Image (cartoon, rainbow, N blue to C red; front, side, top):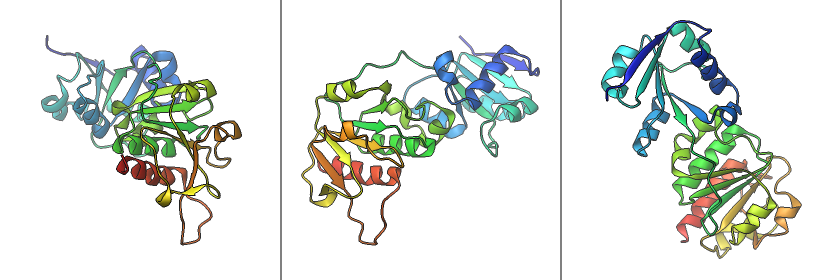
Amino acid sequence: MPSSVTFVHSRDNAFVKDLRRLAQDSTAYRKQGRVWLEGDHLCRALLARGQRPAVAVFSESFWPLAQSQYAQAAMKNIVLADALWTDISGLESPAPQGMGFVLDLAAAPALQPGAATVVLDRLQDAGNVGSILRSASAFGFAQVLALKGCAALWSPKVLRAGMGAHFALRLVEGAGLAQVQALGLPLLVTSSHQGNYLHRAALPWPCAWVLGHEGQGVAPALEALAAQRIRIAQPGGEESLNVAAAAAICLHASGAAR
């Protein structure tokens, strides 16, 4: 069945109002059960994983160019007046390709015990969270467990920073200590000042890496469950590393040691 096309020019259109919330409100996806993927890269990443959006959305000026690549990606195409697109876009400088997908979210996945996991403990910065998701996917961690208090995993900013990693991961939000224990895995807790040095540690596989709040680190209750505390040697003398940088180093070392 060919895709349908609807042109929209009114700010009061119900779809436009919902789309604006998805693009600009970090938790709107929880109410709507769908997410907004803006830009060519995220859209291509979704299609590359064999997934299809519910709706494809284009700016009116980009629509003539989009038809050859994306017109059949979804059953429904919405073409917005350029002024509406500029108003909705969550990018500081909207990309020249005025396009995006609305993706229906599946039901929240159940925790998978025994799967190599990254545990996020109250991380606040969306850029850090998205970057960690990219590292998790790149280095063989199939699951991310975000504890209560973390930045919303499917928010627009985390999606952009994740660069498509979301579509390769099992993402569990709003978890607590019980879910961490239910993983049934050795917990490796990052620390700035104590524990085994990463380059000397015997790293188990599968495992769960616990990454803590940007300022406060890992909560004491979680740290008490650690099989190992791990720190990264810093011969240059810096006091600590950005949590996303530390995550990339640790997850790479862990994946390489499998």
